[in-house]
Image 1 (cartoon, one colour):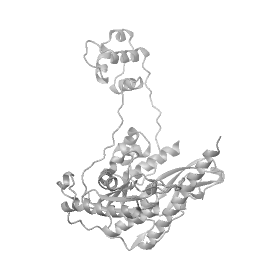
Image 2 (tube, helix red, strand yellow):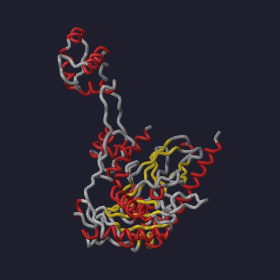
Image 3 (cartoon, helix red, strand yellow):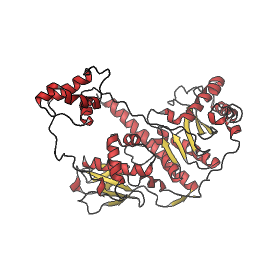
Image 4 (tube, one colour):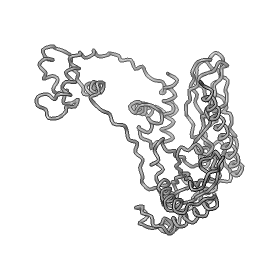
Length: 441
């Protein structure tokens, strides 16, 4: 457990550096810890230097002077006051009101029992006995319009009017990849393809970057073609790495939160009702034709009821779009690793004395077989640092890195190949899991 908590504290420090705008609820959701734990460790980490590793070690939680437990009569009286308000009180008493009425109880005074002195103790007793219902935390997602062309939303839309092949296995025969700028509601691109795999989607997004330049951030849902990775992967998907190396922030929607991709989802409703459902295109070429026509209609002719557009078409309200930074000539192929600098992993050493990180094995020591070790990613040097006192060598070069800058066309082809490799490996793992389930009696 110590290794797990150590890794959680290290990852909290990493997330505070990577996402300083996140709330405590978002940090707790990402780490799988409670909000009170996050609040406590934020204070401890902020009071220590950024490079201090000793602060990640927890302190003893054993009470120095544990208080005497409350008598059962006191607990029963607290619950009775909660259920039946005393002295004609016309409302359900809270911890503060109960704290006032307890010393006035004659029976407790005669018994001379120890009474709680804080509302926190009374609140804990009421919670333990289910007298207080707790609301689920709400994660707010501000919907203020960003600057034009700085924040894009991306999603797929199925053209369901195209009939599937009789013996085909594909559910989505033709799809459209739509890209909306949140600051202007302009439809930047609508790529139509019969087979949108991870590599095809990456090429389509790269084509849009080539046309408009590089935005500050893009938002996508949790479609496996965007963020899917084979089992055992510890690094982001090929598309996320591709965008990170270009300096683009990738924002992934939380599970079952499509409202975080609201602008492109709202466009899908208009695109579906006013184009696909009305015209019913039946082939790939027909989908491309009606989509291109509707894109022109949506951007230049159709009035948009968004508050910032004033009931005008998006391109009429924003006739001039600001220029974005162009694609670089040379790309650091390992630049994405800086986003993981300081990230901690916990691994179980196998019987051969090795651990697996991102489908690659690193030999540590046979003497550590069966033990859990904490691993820290150094995104600056490209090394894997092992936190264990028994090891003489505590750092290993990360495998699979390019360790060089590449021309952009070569880098794009490299990421397309990696996206294709990840897709095939993920499909293979799913087939094996399916056949294993079929063989189980």
